[in-house]
Amino acid sequence: MESNCKLYAYFHLFLLFFTSLAQAADPQTDSLLTLKSLLTDNSNTLQDWSLNSNTKPVPSCSWSGILCNQNSTSVISINLSSKSLSGTFPATLLTAFTDLLELNISDNSFSGSLPQEIFNLTTLRSLDISLNNFSGPFPNGASSLKSLTILNALSNSFTGSLPTDLPLLESLKVLNLAGSYFTGSIPAQYGSFKSLEFLHLDQMNDVIRAEQQKDVYSFGELVLEILSNGKLRDAGRLVHNKPKDVLLREVYAENENVVEQEVKRVVEVALLCISSNHSDRPSMEDALRFLSESHSSRIK
Ligand SMILES: *[C@@H]1O[C@H](CO)[C@@H](O)[C@H](O)[C@H]1NC(C)=O
Ligand SMILES: *[C@@H]1O[C@H](CO)[C@@H](O)[C@H](O)[C@H]1NC(C)=O
Ligand SMILES: *[C@@H]1O[C@H](CO)[C@@H](O)[C@H](O)[C@H]1NC(C)=O
Ligand SMILES: *[C@@H]1O[C@H](CO)[C@@H](O)[C@H](O)[C@H]1NC(C)=O
Ligand SMILES: *[C@@H]1O[C@H](CO)[C@@H](O)[C@H](O)[C@H]1NC(C)=O
Ligand SMILES: *[C@@H]1O[C@H](CO)[C@@H](O)[C@H](O)[C@H]1NC(C)=O
Image (cartoon, rainbow, N blue to C red; front, side):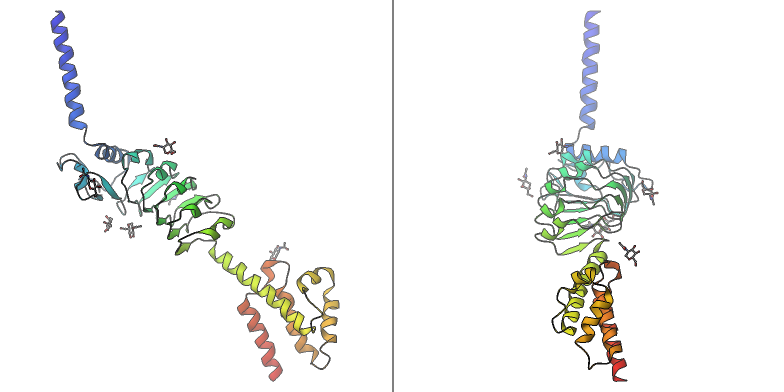
């Protein structure tokens, strides 16, 4: 009876060993199988991700979207782009990929938050999560991706402020964070990217406009300084203390021989340029157009 029990136990152990042997591929292949089981793959695009394909030593090296190193011992690229996949993206599973250079999950329907663990893939050179629906804040920790040269997150649903730690990525050449719902201004740190060649942010237009309006401000001050023969320096500050017509009188006093109407027009454009409310200031282009219009009306 006792030996029967023993035999039974051995048999169990054997079964356990056998089944685990059958399932256990290498850790990377295992991770991909688990990944597949957690993703929603309605179009069955990961059909060939199975242990039937018997490539040794890493079966997953022959699977679609997977690229291994030369001797097929380690996965270096995972390309799941445009595979109609959805669900959340279980980045915690990817710790087995210690040699991964590229991760591309672009153009799927991944949703939920972007797991911070995606930044544990410290060997990555390119990360493309564009054209999905990741939401919530963009996680902190991207600065651990020391070799990253491309980060494309175009067209998701991120909210909150733009991540401030990206400028620590000294190799980053391409950064695209446009097409989400980031709020606030561009972090001051974004002035310190080391290698950046391409930057796309929605706030970009605001910055360019602000820059133009900053230029137009100095331009307005300069025009008033010239018109007043140097009496009105720093007119932007003065205009807050003196009523507009007092300022105008100072300018007109210096321009007695010129038709008042013409000077008035130029002064008005200059005053618009130094408006304290940024959104009232014209672009440089518009300021020059206003001035040339007043110039041509003088020729008439
Ligand atoms: C496999 O190739 C890589 C380079 O692609 C090399 O670094 C590694 O040592 C090789 N491993 C084996 C087991 O041959
Ligand atoms: C990645 O996958 C997409 C779609 O399956 C394919 O069109 C593209 O060529 C692949 N890219 C690479 C670098 O293999
Ligand atoms: C990711 O890295 C962080 C910090 O290095 C570590 O604390 C965490 O355990 C890692 N997560 C995974 C899933 O390996
Ligand atoms: C990701 O895959 C898409 C589609 O295959 C491709 O257009 C894109 O260039 C890839 N991204 C990167 C960073 O290689
Ligand atoms: C994207 O995610 C947001 C937030 O979870 C959700 O409100 C929105 O409906 C989603 N958009 C699509 C196209 O699935
Ligand atoms: C600035 O001007 C804009 C448009 O003319 C207006 O909507 C806004 O309220 C003004 N802001 C201030 C602080 O006056």
